Image (cartoon, rainbow, N blue to C red; front, top):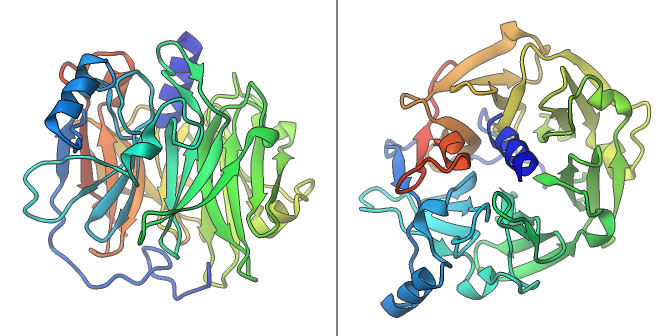
Length: 381
């Protein structure tokens, strides 16, 4: 349990081509001023009825203080959140809620429905740790299949990636990762990429196995790209394998990756990753000044990160050299909360940050629950 806690704490703390903007490939509808922070404590859910809520509470299936959001995606006035089942009492692991101005409270609605939240049902979601919305408004989620990670970890089901239509709420595709992982696998981050011919690919980081899982949706097959040992040089343990997809103006994409404990950042053109030919093509971008926690991208050329344990967020335009002089400060929490995800808010033409007192949650020191906030990124662009 101690190792599991340390690794999770480290992980969190620590397309058809279109015209690019400084916030990515989607053109915002228009500028908005309704960008006030949205804050909540623990998690409150929209249950079918009061008796169902009482039953969930009495059976230990709903413990509000054990709920925490770590990853997010925004479409219009709706935010989709990953609620990993780190502890028991998390009734739904994928939810949505409204950030529309005038909303009085933050209440979670299981997405797409309650039936897909059932623990032990391998057709349902067990523990969602990451999520991505692509340009077709398809929501992709990474489900590790392991629950109660901080208490007594239990593998309920094989790991999988599930694609759902945001417009209809229907499950479009379920990709089993069982044959591409091992019992020691530690799946952490998810990326969705589109090849020039329109083919869709999914990339998943497997920190324990020093690998990136690649799945070709059109061919309905996948494989593992084992990274060279140089990627883990100087690493005390294979703790957290961050991945971030960068989109160039010319339409090409490139995957940036690094372990939290290593001192180097690497990249690999997606065309090589998709073909499974990585040997000799991985670029060493240089030494990291600190232990970087990559928290997101603008779906364009920028990577957002912070230093381990620090509340200040930086933006690095990957078109510039990887050097401290090119790291621009863009956000710092006024409440000392730590950002776990930076996501584009296209409707309001800005970037948002999901932040919380995650270290307190990990140590079970949150009282009524972790304080979570969807804030507005500000700073030098």
